[in-house]
Length: 158
Image 1 (spheres, rainbow, N blue to C red):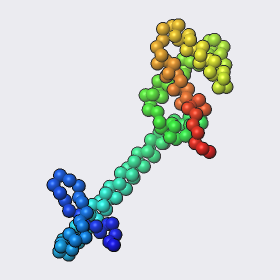
Image 2 (image 1 turned 135 degrees about the vertical axis):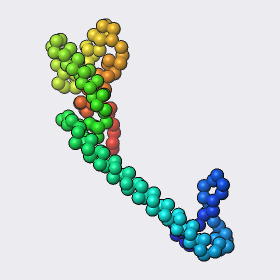
Image 3 (image 1 turned 60 degrees about the vertical axis):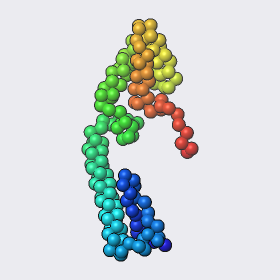
C-alpha cells in the first residue's frame, strides 16, 4: 500500500479533491502522477511554513505583552492577560468604591466570610441608593479577578 502522502487525487469542479482509485492511478502517466504528488507535498510544506511563521509572530507579540503586564500578587501571567486594560480600570474603580464603603462603615474584608458579609452590606446599600444590578456584578467580577480564591470552584480531578 502507498503512504497517505502519495495518494493521488482528482479535482472535481467546485468540490474538494477526491482520492483516485487504484485502477485510475494506473491509467495516469508516471509524469502526471509525480506532478500531482509534488504539488500536494509543496502545498503541505507551505502550510507548515506558514504555521511556523504565525506561531513565531504570536510568540513575539505575547512576550512583549507579558513584559508590559502589571504583576498582581497571586495572579499568573494568563490570569493577568485575561482582562483588558480598560476592564482593569473599571475593576479598580469598583474595588476602590467597595473598600471606601468598608472603611466608612468599619467592615472587615480580610477573610472570605468577612468579604461576603461586607459585599452583602455594600450591595444592599447600593440597591437602596438606586444602583443597578451591574454594580454588584462588576464588583464580584473585579474581586474574583484580584482575589482568585473567590473565582468559580472547579474540579480538575487533582
